[in-house]
Length: 98
Image 1 (cartoon, rainbow, N blue to C red):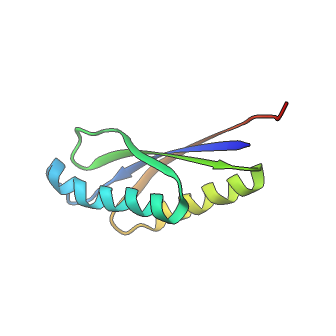
Image 2 (cartoon, rainbow, N blue to C red):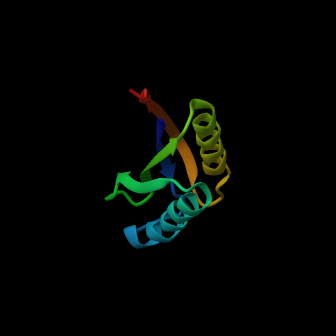
């Protein structure tokens, strides 16, 4: 079993309040959850109007599947018209069966 994690740092253009930030951020998070069957949450910069940090976790049976899924998530994030990706950090972990 392999687990992969992404931290996606986003810039939300035109957001002048936390309320204005909520709509594009919520849409982005829900689309990631539905399209990729991933666990997704806002994990940082909650008090900033134009910046968001989103954590994504994915579990797969092998490293190849995990790598393809994380790459697809990165591509989706970079293609999202509502938010600009400032940074993506990745980490993966694996367990061996006993």
